[in-house]
Amino acid sequence: MTGGSESGRLTASQADRILRANYGNLVKKVGAGRTLSAGEVNLLQAIQDGGRPEARTFAKTQAELSDLLGVSRRTIQRAMKVSGRRTTSFLR
Image (cartoon, rainbow, N blue to C red):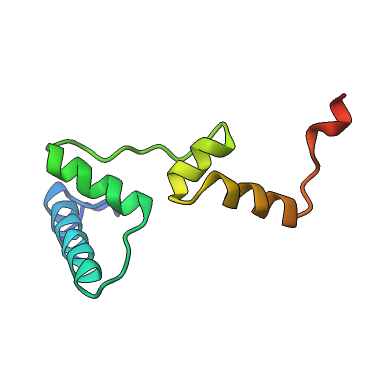
C-alpha cells in the first residue's frame, strides 16, 4: 500500500479504508449464508454501539474461552481431553 508514513505504519485514513472493506466482507459472508465468528459478532456489535470492538484475547477459564471462541464449554473440555492435557487431579 502506498502513501503510508515512512516507518511503514498505516495512516488513519488507510486504516479506515481497510476497516470499511472488512465490514463489507462481513456483509458478504452473512449474505452467503455463512455464520459469523464470535469476534466478528463482537466487531459488528461495537459498530452498532458506536464504539470500539472489545480487544479481549485471553481467557482465564474454560467458560471465558468458550465465549471468546463462540463454542460451548463442553467443546472446550472435549478438546482439552483429546489433546492429552494433564488434569489437576495430581494436586489432590
